[in-house]
Image 1 (spheres, rainbow, N blue to C red):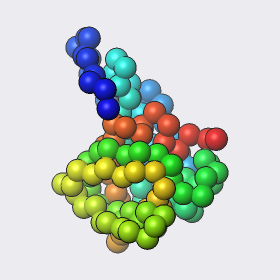
Image 2: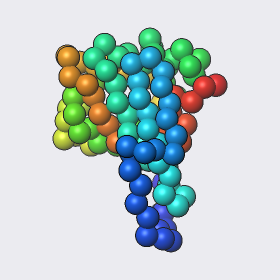
Image 3: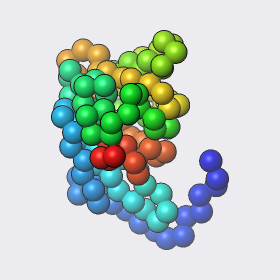
Length: 124
């Protein structure tokens, strides 16, 4: 990833995002600061990418690169080749394209992402 140069002092709230995306059981709140787009991803219990976001983007698996950190809940990610990992609150993560994911348990997942925020859950 190329180095990002910060050109101005800015602050924006995810509570008043520049853009909201709302597939089923999904909230994606997006803010842009300079040339960088950040997202807060909130997934309700019972959320599964292949049953929610897939209905909007129309790909067989998620094709986004993800770089972020989890602040609440637990999510399991399974790559198309079957490898998987579980991400918990307090974890930083990277996820390459070609995966499904689902919320574990009955706590809402909240993750903040840098790399995929500009395109995640946008209709195809």
